[in-house]
Length: 201
Image 1: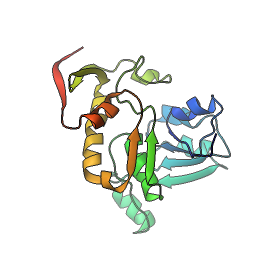
Image 2: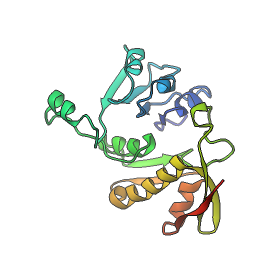
Image 3: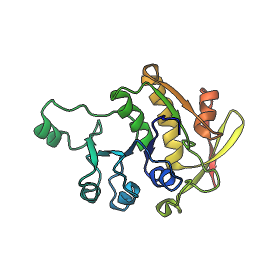
Image 4: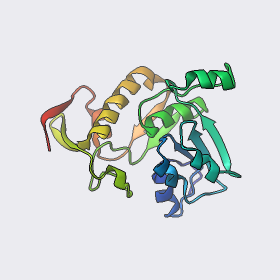
């Protein structure tokens, strides 16, 4: 409301739009076709940053909208990208999730400060704040950080570990705050104590 740009990833786009908050931009990474729903509802006021590995149906649906294509560092299609762009592209580094990549993408575009909301990397209520049935049957781990227990899917736990590695390697180049009481914010407060229990719930 006060003009601060809001950038959404995946299902948070619809979450914000349903609440009258039109994002300045939306970032998408996942290549699976069923994730094409994440771009809806479409907005002419939103800039869509879509990874080149996303399904073609995403690009088809966004025809006529503000779309920028970006490429993941470490992409298996390196030879294809080199043939298409030569040296005229800048691959985006980061972890295996869209939020981790989005931080580096937006930093490359000149944004030095980030306030992250909903980046819990643990289960708070449901596994996501919005419906994502593809994740309903994921295995759940119990993770302990400095005496506090969290329930996480394997993907969420892996993301938390990648976040720590990302901050160690590139954290000096941006100012980042993670809001909430999730695993990520707790790790920031207790950076040297991430471990997982042997048992799986």
